Image (cartoon, rainbow, N blue to C red):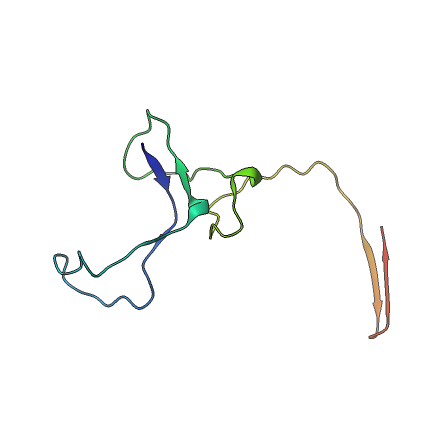
Length: 92
């Protein structure tokens, strides 16, 4: 199985070290919302554009979202009047 991984971070307390010494020390944090299954014909390596996530593929504890596509279907106009700490009027 191939995976598209767009959000990878090093932990903040990682100190510089030699490559061969880092094999057992360094960890990578992968965000679940930035990871998707790749199609079988996808090329390995750097991809110029991220995979676009939709709302049904996201999870609340999945971390950072690299790219999200939204379609606005309705526009609502709100009028707000705020005078002091007591009076607030919202007209929809």
